[in-house]
Length: 374
Image (cartoon, rainbow, N blue to C red; front, side, top):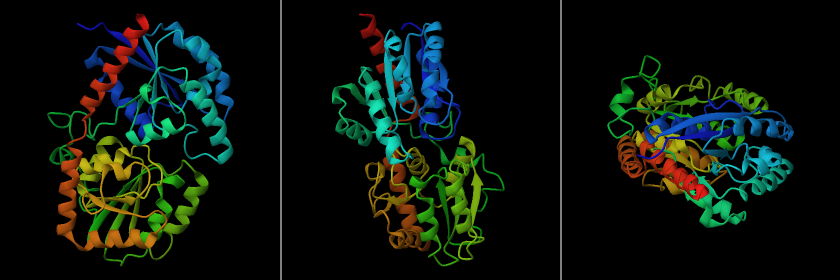
């Protein structure tokens, strides 16, 4: 029997945040005991860049005080750990990378500075577990050796424990629906669902511009996600939502639990997210696993997850007319929605479940610990 290991993941702020990388690590933590892993979190407090780095030494003291068998470095916190890397390298280190060097959603100056700091940290870590092949290629271009990178994508299932193999089951997801999800169409032709926090790269502003071009009876758009991440951007979206062309046709639900999001997937007709930068795009995979055709733009990892005309519609970046045409086509043609949705489900079923992702992640982690011991 493999020895039981204690593993700590260093991250930034609250580890229970509802966004891709945080949810990825939370799901791994839930599955860790089955692999003989005691999985804990340690956090650098959030603050203006680069001030959180001032806490790195104190955090490192706390980490080493627990004598873990390995430490996982979340890419969102990497730059802040640079002052403490000399001490941290005493234990086996594994990078868990969900964003390119420099992060995302920052201005150009911070991005350049943070990218330099990120890479200084990454070069001191022997193995990195990367969310997608697309992100791995970005990291190679940034100068990381390909041999240090192992692609470990998110699992495809939405609800923990749903389905015998851990995969999403639409019928089971439907069991958690309530009156809020009963008729997302609201008397219109189709229900469109977007699951994303309100930040510029998610493309919610161009989505609203495109949706306003649709005839009033074409569909109802449902927005699920945090609305207060970027107050200035959110204020602009709310002004746009007050437009008569959108009033009553767009429903803002705010952040929801995994179970509630699964219920939205089960009740919707089409998933739409014109995001311009997704290192993986977990929500696309979740929507596809639930049998929804996806609509997005030719950017980030989406073209690696779905093909235009096969599992959904992928349109050029910055073309709201093309985005509107794609949504209208799917709103008007139920047979096409079903065909693309079934193809999306079939393709999603070829991707790993969370159980398989955890097995790959922890298997590599154990090898790193063994190599460090030798």
